[in-house]
Length: 279
Image (cartoon, rainbow, N blue to C red; front, side, top):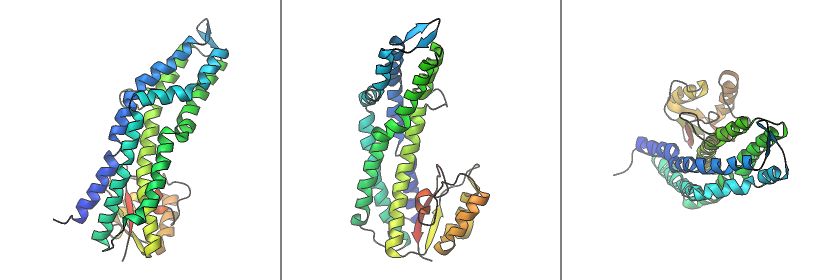
């Protein structure tokens, strides 16, 4: 039995909402391992009246943090979870094909998706377990710890710094978990948007459909676009809509233009989806 439009949209939403569930679990499994590794810093520094003093051993420890954190993540199965997470990009590609077949009567080929699939998967792996992780997570915690030691912070202050970065407590996510959540959520949706933008360019479609549910704190622009003409936005009017969002809405990503709208949509952590269509 052929899938309905609603079924296809719901399948896409499910992929976006649940693709990183196992990845988040692996981060939580890794948190205590990373904490135990980083707290060893306190065994290397000199302590005087409860305050830290830098020495060569502490500096060497801080310089070795990349390897220590990567090894801890690997022991927790995080790297395998990253690779499994990227398999969801193929599921998004299949959903894109189903969507355009149903809505636009267009058969999108795997050859139209594969170049973007390879690039986005490699970029995502880099952000989650390579240079991106070093730049946006490891370097900031190293710099924070170095400042604490340099300024002679109390031992309890350093312990709290490490805990806040790597341990989730109740509803308060660790900085590590927040980083992984944001990167993984953005990566898979931006892959979808990049493929959709290429389809728009190749086939000359003249409108977009903006879909997704609304919640109590949905941004003004998302409320407007979901409700407007059953979610249909003409490409010829898209710049005006973006300008309206910047003036009246909130959370728009700098650099959002008609050429990047399918990727950035309604702004940071936007839950909605846009795809090209005919009107």
